[in-house]
Structures are given as structure tokens and as C-alpha cells.
Length: 43
Image (cartoon, rainbow, N blue to C red; front, side, top):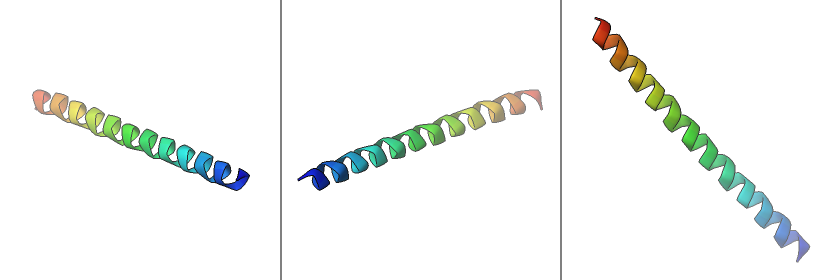
């Protein structure tokens, strides 16, 4: 029974890390889009 709790905890942590990674990627893409837009305004 204890093993199942540990597995569930590990899976929950993995899910949280995956969500954090996805949010970081979205933020990176948004930042790139903003920088590209500003660059095009200058040209």
C-alpha cells in the first residue's frame, strides 16, 4: 500500500514538472513573438 502512495506522489510530481515546462515554453514563445514584432517595427 505504501508503494502505491509513493508511485502516486512521483506521478503527481512528474505531472507538475510537465506543466511547468509547458508554461515555460509558452512564455518563451510569447517573448520571442513580442521581440520579433518590435524588431519588425524598427525595420
